[in-house]
Length: 224
Image (cartoon, rainbow, N blue to C red; front, side, top):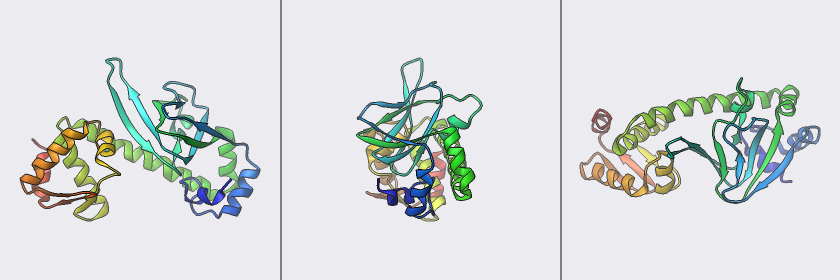
């Protein structure tokens, strides 16, 4: 087990590999592997475990009775899955978590993770920060989905990232396909709307970056 990889995880951030090794030696946990398309957690399944992704990526998927599906988020190495569900009053996973390829995940039961947090306050601080960040991201995600037009969604996302980074240049999150998936729109439609904004002189599209040329005009797109 390469404990140095866990140094970059959200739960063990700031803790040296040798200390992580010692903490885990005294804590019950398991490593589970999943193939592409396999479900790690199922919608409304009892939330018994929290995972830290060691390798690969997973996607949170929310399905609705009408057959539609929203891709809630994608998580990769070092990130946690399931913490809010495990510690919630309801105690159920709110969506399916599916492997996007071969995935290795370190799993903890609630009581074991709480034992880790009691032994080292840094883990408690990291866990609290991660859950708080997830709540904040969900609020942003809900606001993003409240916009119906693809141009509006793109404008909201670009303005939000520009303000967070205090820069007019925003990096595309991995690829156009991934970005489109995060906004629950098709890649061709997203690219088409971005090209329209570029033609209007509002943005400059130079993958992997997009530069906002006219912030006020981009804000006006939100009110269309």
